[in-house]
Every structure is written in structure tokens, then in C-alpha cells.
Figure (cartoon, one colour):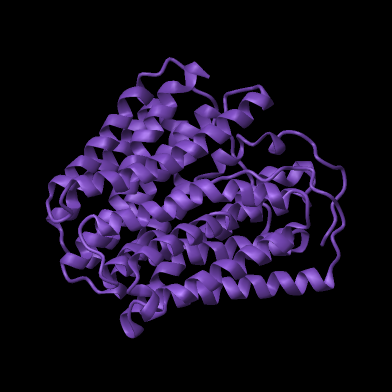
Length: 413
């Protein structure tokens, strides 16, 4: 595990910068007078770039090699970050967010494919868990850094760029042998839906919910009266909830039909979102922090629920391609969601965001409930729930389940 320290340090620095930048853009954009609609499109640009990058990064890494590709994408991300305070325009920021998304998916792919060189399935499981823990911790640290600085100062963009540059030092200096970047095929979406309909719909709807969560929740926090350190603290509470609650929620689901857990989590999160939309509740800031902590813990579990449910039903040869396709569905939802939620916030005000969350989650609970009533569970769970964040298909290769045959046949449910 020690030989992977340089890679894990690099991703920690990288994600700290990414966590800082996401909230910083929402706060600074509000200070510059950007509407919620404009910020929604800006945030959608990041996920659109991330989607494009999943196709462009692997061939680029094969051609350049891991170290040079990491330096290339890090330079691209650094330039995009530093241009934000020089180009204070929503259209400009939207373009820069697309570039940032492309660059970051390239950086993640380099690190994750290197981590995949670990041959021992048991150690791979530990690496995957540690990697996801670092993901959440670094995102939280980014919020702390924003509290230590001034969102209105260009220096915060400089700090973000420095973190991205610093990530290059341990990664490009590693002595690990550069592995191959496999071409992971994607399972056709029609086939994926026929094999795992609940997982497919849950991935798309969780993307619709999580895209605006990252991009517009800081805007919502500012609109309900939080300022200064309040906005990053609000985001920190949500991330802390996601880090602390998704694992116990998932472990409980391992002993039951995952669809029951998915429906219960969706309904509970929808209820919290409705409460957060009430003006009387919004005036009680301590209650709002508790709500967002619990809400974060619930919605962060939705995508891992979808992955775990899919793993229960796909044949071993389809697991990796199925995970890749599920990630694609989630990414499309995440790219579309901020634009829709931002338009609603511009028209109806801050309460539109939690009500949008509630509507998406109720749709997920309704679909899951219909499948639960019409299709009985056909099998127990051969794979455990794993706490995770959406990154790239390479991270899913770290899961031992995608290497180990789970069951020989395919069944719909």
C-alpha cells in the first residue's frame, strides 16, 4: 500500500482543489450578479466536459503515457482555473467549466488506472475503499479552505491552481510502472435496462439530483441568508453527511431487497427536501444544517445503491461494461440537472431547488415501488454495498466484483 502513497497524495491535492473550485464559483458568481439560471448552465458545463473526457482521455493516455498525460491535463486544468477571474462572464465560465471537466477526468483516469495495477483482489478492495474515503475527505477540505479565504479575491483561484499543480509532483515522480489503459466496452443501454431497470433509472435520476447538488446548493445557501463562512460550512455539512451515513445505509441494505432500501432512502430524502423549501424552516439555520447533513447522507447513497443493485443481477462478463454504462447514464443526468434546476430557481426563487430535488426523488421512489410490486426479488446479494462517488470507469475496475465471477446466469427483475 505504501507504494501507492504518491498517487493517493496526488488525488487528495487534486480533489481538494476541485472541491474548493466548485463552491468558489457558485459564491463568486453570485457576487458578480450571475443569475441562478446562468450558474446552472455553468455547472452543467463541468459535467458535460466530464462526459466528453471519458471518451478523449484513454486514447490520449495511451499515446502520451501516464506521466505526460497527467502533466498535460494538469496544465489544461490550471489554465482554465486561472482564467476564471480574468473572464467574468457566464458564457466564458461555462466554456472554462467544460475544459475543466475534460481535464479532471483525464487526471482521474491516469491515477485510477495506475491504482488498478494492484493485482491482489483483497488489496484492491482496500485501495478502492481508501480511494473513496480520500475523495470525500478532500472535497470537505476544499470547503474549509474557502472559509479561510475571500471568495471575492482572485487569490482563491490561484490557491486552486496551486493545488492542481502540486498534484503533479507526487504523481509524475512515482516509480510505479505505467500500466495499460484498457478499452472498456459499454453495455448497450437497452440491454442494461432490460437486465437491471431499477439500477438504470436510479443512476439517471441520482445524476439529475447530484448535478445541481454540487453546483447550486451553495447558491441556495446564499439565498436563504448564509454568507461568509456559512456557505462552505453548509456544503461541508452535506459532504460530512454523505461520508458518514452512506456506508451504514448500504450495509443495512445488504440483508434485504435493495429496492426497498432505495425507495426508503429516496422518500426520506424527498421529505427532507420539502422541509428545506419551507420559509419557516429556512429561518432556523441550525435546523437547515441538520437537514442538509441528513440529506447529504441519503442522496450520496443513491448511486452506490444503483451500482450494488446492478451487480446483483449482471453476469460476471458484463459487470465492468455494465458499471461503465451506468456511470454514463448518471453523468448525462448530472449534466442536464443543473440547467433545469437553475432555470427553476431563476423563475421561482430559492425554494425551487429543494422542491426540484423532491420531485426527482419521488419519481425514483415511485418507479422503484412499481417494480417492487410487480417483480419479486430473484436472488440474494452476491456483492456487498460499497460507499463510492462517481469518478471514471477506471475506478470501477478497482472493485474486486468486476474481476471475480459472481454467478453464471442472467436474470431480469
